[in-house]
Length: 85
Image 1 (cartoon, rainbow, N blue to C red):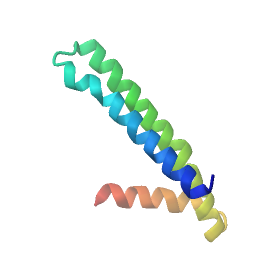
Image 2 (cartoon, helix red, strand yellow; image 1 turned 120 degrees about the vertical axis):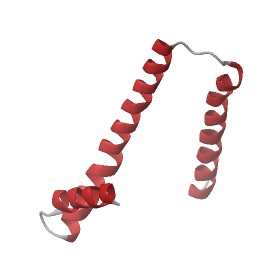
Image 3 (cartoon, rainbow, N blue to C red; image 1 turned 180 degrees about the horizontal axis):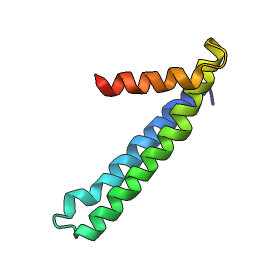
Image 4 (tube, rainbow, N blue to C red; image 1 turned 45 degrees about the horizontal axis):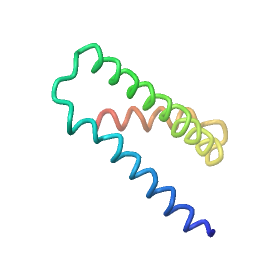
């Protein structure tokens, strides 16, 4: 199996898993507030972890490779610039 085929398979499986995960939303109309708060908190935690481990750390490493020792400053400035606009 080539890398392209593996990528297509992984993308297809991820898309199918997302669709299956969204199916309960079609059938549940009333969700208690405590359940909703728990689900939203879990989703927020996953997104914060993804940001921290998959985006910020590689960004700092790339910034250090481009401008020696300045990666954290570059990522911070980019985040502040992005928050303004």
